[in-house]
Length: 250
Length: 306
Ligand SMILES: Nc1ncnc2c1ncn2[C@@H]1O[C@H](COP(=O)(O)OP(=O)(O)OP(=O)(O)O)[C@@H](O)[C@H]1O
Ligand SMILES: [Mg+2]
Image (cartoon, rainbow over all chains, first blue to last red; front, side):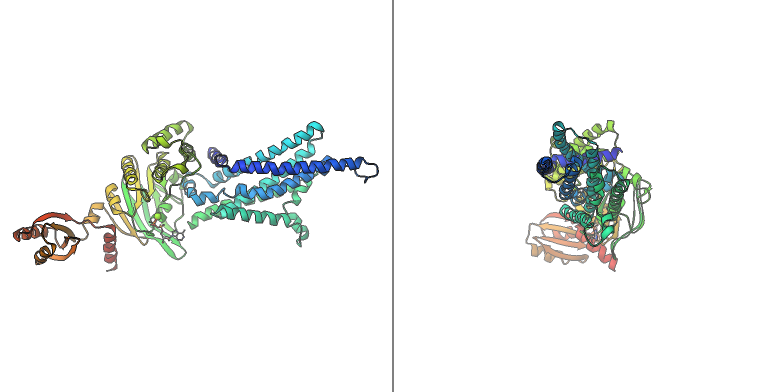
């Protein structure tokens, strides 16, 4: 536990001592607020339409027409962001030779992996926390039932954590962070579009994005939670195996 | 402290370390000497539990490295070939991190950091970012890192490579200071370095151990062959003429204004000097020639082949 915490602290220092964390947060805030205001705009014009007696008869819902789509939009942003967040996590240790320090210290792989994984999750939570501010703004003007929004957040949190776990595994594969980033992006994109194509229902099952749909409707489906859990576990476990195999080859 | 039995490391079909065995006692400072690609780093990586051996056993501090890696890792400090530092951390942050992963208790941490800072002469750079340090300081941070948990055994892989002459002297002095408190296993490809620091030398080439001996015996006592360099005031060809008539000389050649004379027995040297004086040669120096690593190697490998 203490050793996991030591790794965790060290990881956060890397992100915050270098411009990395600040650049990521700034870019993220910029893009996500852009999306948010854009969608808020659309929602408002839709709601004006719905007041018009000659317009379509359609009952607007904040949950369905705003929170849900916004969460899916965030998922797209994270698809591009997460590869950068995790690319250096293992590969840089190998590139700099500090992997040898970790591997010859009385540490277990699990200390290294959990410490590092929690650190990227922590950064991710900070990003999510910033977006909460947007909704607080809406809430003050127009109080709404927060239950669905909370479930949406749980969904996006699980989805992002899964992205991070996959990125983590890819980072263990390469010595160069950039290769890890490109691979992560490729894998995530494939998992995303798996539901679109010839694979049919099976594709939908393995596609990463279909599993967040129920969350956007305010439903916590155990099957989806299970899916994310399995992918996270499997990715981190594979990273663990791969890290051991590096030592066999070196 | 370190016991190695029939250790082998293969990469594919290539044997980087080929069936080596040796023992190192407590408090010894041992040099592991060999040219590039000899298998030094590979051996050290096996002994530190970084990479598993293909076959054979290694005991460090009484624990089998592959069976009890945690126990071994607690008792060793390791400076790899390139200091394993995080450039974006300060020296203090870095040492504090290493202290934590080595399992040092919180209340002892500050004391240990202060100790290694003082020991390795890092006080002036303690709050600097490691990326801003010179190579010499980085190397000292690397040594400090290896010392932080006061390990019984230190593994230092080419601790002076890439340093300038002043930094080399500083690092050697530091290692000399550490010898009383730790068993030290250091690799090098420089013979004088090993002779200056070590009680014992293990020579490795092509993954095989060629010799285990004291540095003095290795550099001077190569199977009874003795080479001396003679300096004269006189014309060197005249000197060569006279000396070369001496019966017991094995080999004689002119090297940069001095004579290099190889004799079969060291007792021939006073006879040569007497002969020179009788012939009115003015000798200004007689210097025993210590073998360079290359010569020791050449010698050991040719002996091996014969
Ligand atoms: N991961 C690896 N895969 C394949 N071959 C390797 C690997 N690591 C080392 N070797 C080979 O094993 C041999 C021994 O290498 P090693 O690094 O142990 O030599 P060394 O004595 O430390 O040399 P140097 O003085 O250059 O550091 C070399 O021929 C090297 O090419
Ligand atoms: Mg080496």
